[in-house]
Image (spheres, rainbow, N blue to C red):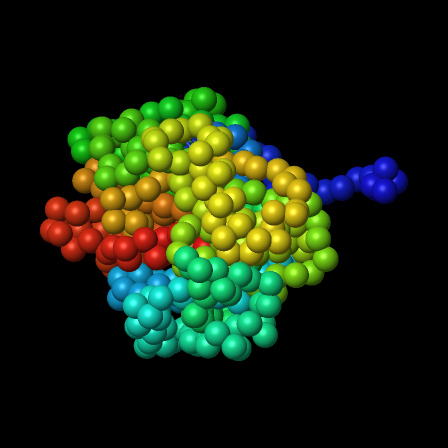
Length: 403
Ligand code: FAD
C-alpha cells in the first residue's frame, strides 16, 4: 500500500557531530530524548547533542509494554509519577505528535483482606498527591471485566484498586515525538555513535570519546538505562544497580476484550490489549544478571502460569512474539537523577522495569538538574547518597514494576 508514496521527509536531521556542545546526553532512549526536548523547549539550552550507540528506539523505550500510571505509595515517588502523568496528558499538544496516549485505566486486583488494606492506603496516598484512585468491590469489578477467574480457590478476586487516568501510550510514538521536537529546536541527534570513554581532567568532565571521535562538552548527562553500570564504570564509578532481562509477550489479534490494564495481585502478571487486538503481557525479570536483550524459558512458564491463574481463556490465544530488554535494577527499586562526584557529569538511571511511565518527568527533571544544577522539586529524593544514608525509597515491589 505504500509503494506509491515517495519523497518522505525524515522526522529529524542526521547531523555529523560538532567538535563540542554545552550539554551532551548519552543514550537516545526515551529518557535521553525527553531530556534533550525539555532542555531545548523549556530551559532554552540550544547547544545540545544526544549520542545513541544504535538507532532511536532500539533500547527499552521500544521494548516495553507501554503502561503509564501514577499509583505509587511513598512520598519520594508519588508526586514525581503524578507529575509524569500530567506531562503525559499534555504530551501530544507539546510535541505536536500522535503518541497514542490512551487513558484506559489500570486495575490492580485484590486477593486478600490484607491486600485490600494495603491498596486502600496506597489509594489514599495517591489522592493526597493529587492523583485519582478508586477502590472497586467484587461485583462492580465483575461487571467491568467478567472474564477473570473470580473463584480461583487459591487466588479468589475480592476487588481492585483502579486509577482511571492511567493507561498506555505508543512507545515508539513517544520516541519519535520527543526526537522530532528536540531536533526542530536545534538538538543534534547522532545515531550510531557509541560513547566509549569519558575525558576527565582535574575532577571535571571535558567531553566523551565516541566511535565517531572525541566530542567536547561542558556537561554530560548519562541516560543509558540497562547499560548504566557499563557506561558509568568508564568514569570509574560502581553503581548500586544490577542489570537483568525483562521479557514481554504479545498474542495474535483478538476482538476488543480488555478495556484497560489489569494486574494480578497474587503473582507477577499484567495484561492489556493493543489497538491491533494483541494481548500484551508480561511478568517478572529473569533471575540472573545479563546484558543480553533476550530472556529464558523458566520466566516464560512463570508468566503464562500467572496468566492462566487469572484469566484461563488466555490459554486459547496463540502467542505471536516474545522479546526482552535490559533493566537497570536499583537496590531499592527507585531511580537516581543526580550529579556525580565528577564535576559536569550527571546520571539518570535505576528505572528498574518501570521507567516508561516516568519518561516525561524523568526528562523534565534531568533537564532541570542539567540546566540549573538543582534537583526538580519532585525528584529531590532520587540521590545517590540515599543508600549510604539509609533513606531508601522501597515500595516493596509494588512500585517500580511495568504494570
Ligand atoms: P532505553 O530505550 O534503553 O535507552 C537507553 C539508550 O542508551 C539505548 O538506546 C542504548 O542503545 C543507549 N546506549 C547504551 N550504551 C550507550 C553508549 N555507550 N553510548 C551511546 N548510547 C548508549 N516501564 C513502564 O513504565 N511501563 C511498562 O509497561 C514497561 N514495560 C516494560 C516491558 C519490557 C519488556 C521492558 C524491557 C521494559 C519495560 N518497562 C516498562 C521499562 C522501561 O521500558 C524502561 O525503564 C525505560 O524505557 C528506560 O529508559 P530509556 O527509555 O531511556 O531506555
